[in-house]
Length: 67
Image 1: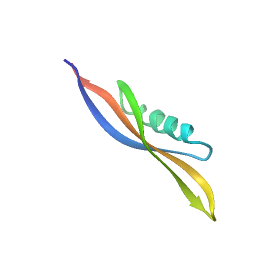
Image 2: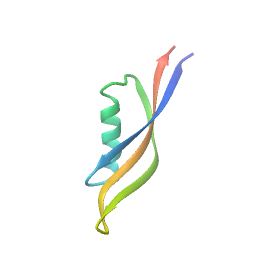
Image 3: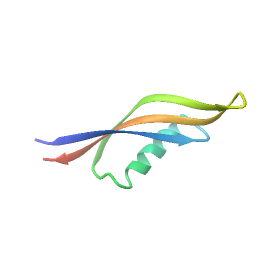
Image 4: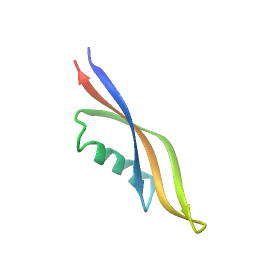
């Protein structure tokens, strides 16, 4: 039987929500091994001078910690 841990991370992009989600996973993968699943749980934007300046994606990442 496998055991999984779940963490939430936030990725940021200047261009698009999908880039923000990818950035979150790419950064997490630098220190987390065995990522099995990622779920985007929240999207939001940062607004400066009445314009969108950053896209943010909160991503819930599942990874295996035991068998």
